[in-house]
Length: 159
Ligand code: ZN
Ligand code: MN
Image 1 (cartoon, rainbow, N blue to C red):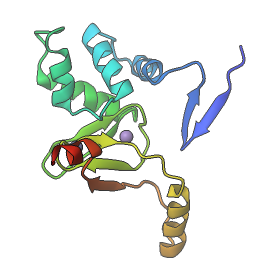
Image 2 (image 1 turned 60 degrees about the vertical axis):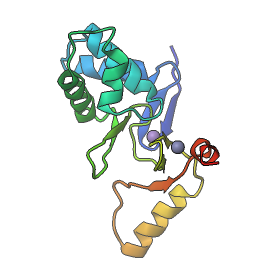
Image 3 (image 1 turned 45 degrees about the vertical axis):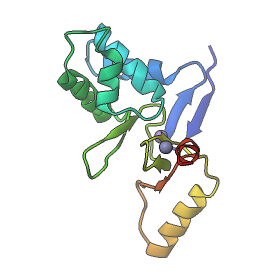
Image 4 (image 1 turned 90 degrees about the vertical axis):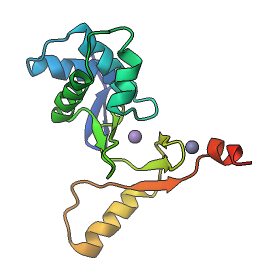
């Protein structure tokens, strides 16, 4: 079977594998058992709709898994993070958010009112990274680029 490898920002994604498949495989390869709880957590983190917090994930799953604790969700996220399969967006107030759909560094736009986080598609990012490297003579390994503002829904609700 021929599989085309698409290289994107250092992450190899095959056409046949979803983020969910990739994270589950990585967990298996590293000797982690795939429990129903873990499967459900990976399902949410693989989509990362809205960049959920640990509490968001817990809230989504507490009905399906009444015995599961917040600490269990947290431990699972830490495990997935240690495998490099989820991007952690840390904030000074401790309200960390997670993106398992795009686990590599990428810019974010954050609504200061409703805390919505979205991924903008920026053409100028590669250019900016090259400029930073040549300007500072640093070898750039990583970046963190956040834009803060008020989303269109929150703007509409102000009136
Ligand atoms: Zn908003
Ligand atoms: Mn993101």
